[in-house]
Amino acid sequence: MHKELIETIEFQITEVDRLFEEYDLFFQNMNYEEPDLVQITVMANIIHSFYTGVEKIFEKVSKGIDSYIVTGNKSHQELLDNMCTKNDNREALINKDIYLVLNEYMKFRHVFRHGYSFQLNWGKMKPLAESLFNTWDKLKEQITAFIKSNI
Figure (tube, rainbow, N blue to C red):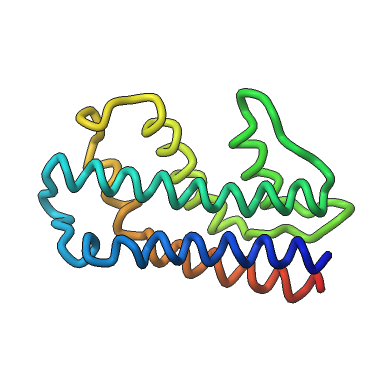
């Protein structure tokens, strides 16, 4: 793997880490049991930003290693599917367990982008919000292992 690609991926990792750092006070004060509309809206934005950051990493791998850029109306699903699949150029970036979790974040991304914040359903969002840090830690471990195995 090229040094420039590794640096780009590592930069994107630091950006997702920074996302969580910037909202640290929000997370400390978040009412996960009965959030108000403002908390739901901010959390939705954080979840959306998180998955956007994840996709940026996946896009870098797809373009930099696979020499493939996904396009079209199913591009988000295809990109995620590709990261869970071994191909001629690389091993799978993520395992099936994290794939299934990320698939739920990807679905939420669609809801967030195509609806109004006052329409968000906290019951559906809550599992994503509560597992955000754990999901990122597991994903970051897999990305780091992928980088180390492809140097």
